[in-house]
Image 1 (cartoon, rainbow, N blue to C red):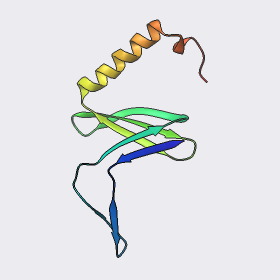
Image 2 (cartoon, rainbow, N blue to C red):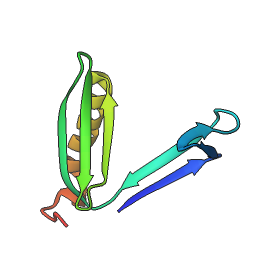
Image 3 (cartoon, one colour):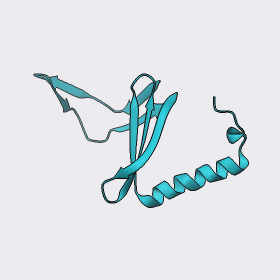
Length: 91
């Protein structure tokens, strides 16, 4: 399941083209649940891309600088060491 919440979002459709209406002060939150595949790969010369996809073809990709990727790795290591989330229960 993929959800997206776009704050202060308004577009105009004019001859098949989407155009922003109003100020460029929009914000969005996207969430992907039921991830069936996940991978990390290089993205350009300076970033790491994390890519996630569910069984319905919805996808989220996030490009991180190496320091940000390391923070994610460290956070996962902390969870694995001290959280019941990693106690052999995959579902």
